Length: 84
Image 1 (spheres, one colour):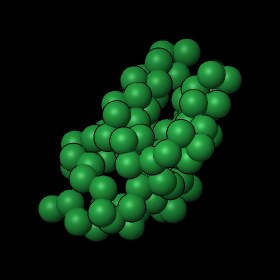
Image 2 (image 1 turned 180 degrees about the vertical axis):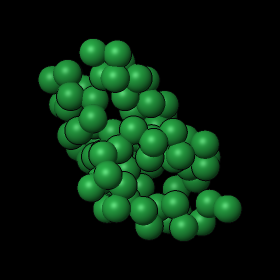
Image 3 (image 1 turned 30 degrees about the horizontal axis):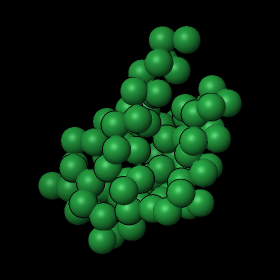
Image 4 (image 1 turned 90 degrees about the vertical axis):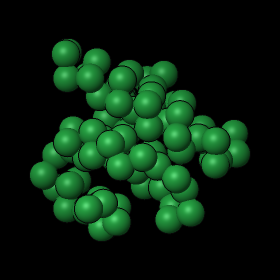
């Protein structure tokens, strides 16, 4: 339960960076996952939505990345290439 709370907090923080770039329709999966009590799904959906033109602080990406399972870390590893 504590892990879900932590994931939810990080998903909300990342959402504040990603959602401004998206339309309401594009953001629907994030809101649906959060409403269903699935913050991990919301977090991974946000990560999948990140494009290179989005300005996402490195700390927010690293925090989100730290919550991923090892399989998901492999999938999202390319997002970290610009972080030094």
